[in-house]
Image (cartoon, rainbow, N blue to C red; front, side):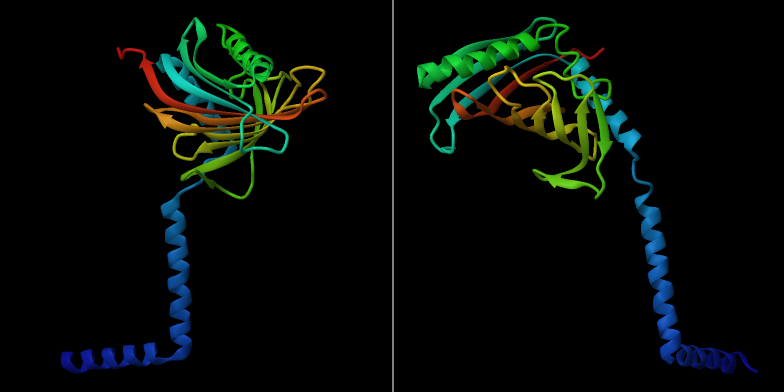
Length: 257
């Protein structure tokens, strides 16, 4: 058979094969299988729970090592019972943090009930100052040494535009500033994106556990709080909700070597 005839024979045979419905179906199935296999290889293995937890520890440690101080403006608003629109008291403070020293607060403005500011806002700032003294903060960091962590099933979730892994967390020791709840960490670097839960211990015998939520954003390469809220019920005052908005971070980093 001449080369010309052989070429025409191969072309006609290919047309017959492709024209066959059974062959077309088999080719389609084969292509789909190859696409799935190729996609799986392109994605690579997903990080396991232990790797994610190690990443959380590393992200927290990197922040602690790098940041030697910062200032931030914090706005507090207090709401009572079902009215979550009109605050009964507000306070704006300028917060200064220095590594090895702790936090100090300078009141910028106050408004609303004097009693609520004294009983609620003064108490919050005093507690924050106390738990941020050198040595006292070590037990409150969200790391595996302080918390049991378990990766939730269902895959990543989007939080404030960030793809996040979702973990259940429970403190190894109970304290008013330790949270039982859910932690969202950025899938790119395991930095904290959001936290929701309930304090593992009440602040006093007159209140129940506080429901807490905190949102974070990346500032100068590190995770910093941008919004928080806490809600608790007491025998004397009923439901009290406090929101905090953070703005104007000025971060002092450790000089690079």
